Length: 371
Image 1: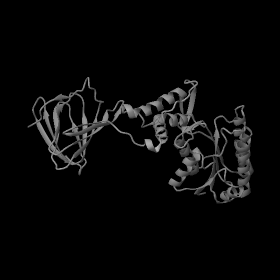
Image 2 (image 1 turned 120 degrees about the horizontal axis):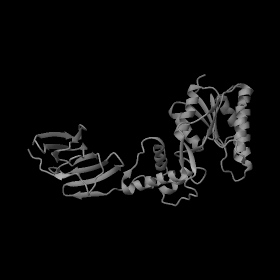
Image 3 (image 1 turned 45 degrees about the horizontal axis):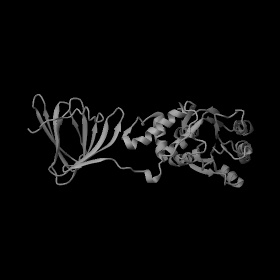
Image 4 (image 1 turned 180 degrees about the vertical axis):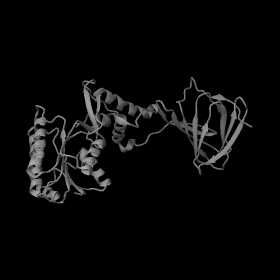
């Protein structure tokens, strides 16, 4: 069966919003069911659907009786509606790692699973159950049931967070990985049963809070950690998603003189730093060499002439580049170098250095470059 239309319950919740958007991106047609939807809307959606993703649930109701009313009874009502539709639709169930615990919540989540899993015997439907741990990512509600969302939201606004036990273990899955796991079920149609989202991250409450505090400090220090892979990639994206629109930009320190301006954009822990500078027509910048430091220049506007002189042999090299060709120019240890704006407009360059500038050990020695 070709799956094209997906009925999603809890479509306006945290996971639901992420899933519905992704379904649309990859060509599915989602049918959104929320608490405002009627029984007839649910029944009509089931007649159109090729599969169902059941996300609706109660996490922190004011009345504990709502656990059973929503987690069990609503799941049973969904199962009955699918049976009434007369087709064995595949069903993905977002349950909880706490299902089966001796609590109102744990009992209700297990009962909801069982109501839908019974569709296998009732009509031969393939039911796929995910017992999710703590899910985090963009659009999670702070001060509700996500410590990560609460930490991100409050730290981004400079308000305090409360941590009773920093060493408390915390198992996390990222919402994008949850959505990807659901889409894999829809496309691959594996056998029914329980499934896991991968990767799962095991950490502590205190470690997560400290990491997020580090992201907030980046704007003051200019230093950013390794946010390109794994848990830190996901946590950093989540933190940034909690910034208010008024905080989407921030100033950086600029050093200006008659030659032009220079600013450090971003520093990394182990891969150097990025800067930007400009120079007025006829201005030469540089005139030094390095023993170990290396740099990459990218002229993004204007015209530039780079000159190089070997500190031992005196060999000389010269090259011109401009913002029209976007060419990387490397500086090489042991070669003095400078750059001159040879155009009629302001020259603007991006600059990467392989190490953070250290005023105590600058590895920058003045030297003339002229041929």
